[in-house]
Length: 84
Image (tube, rainbow, N blue to C red; front, top):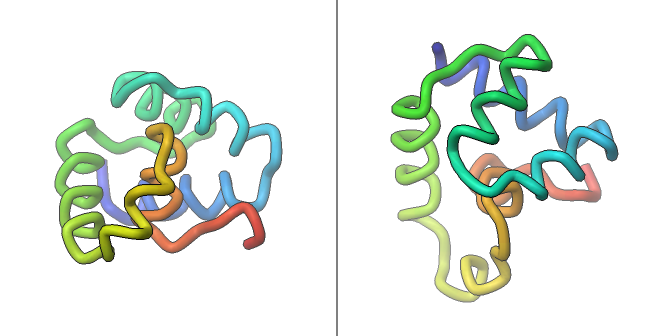
């Protein structure tokens, strides 16, 4: 349940189109945590929320306006994009 597992999951999603699509389809925290777990990345909702809040709090408003899903938010929070 570590930040390292969360970061590894986001890196995996950035490199895998199918995983990234599943992440973008996530409708909430439980979906993200379950998807990560199915890929071997174990972290809690608390870890996800704390890391996400910290990263998002530093983002400029214009960057946040483009976020349309939990997947987008998570990828943005950890600096991963569809182009990574």
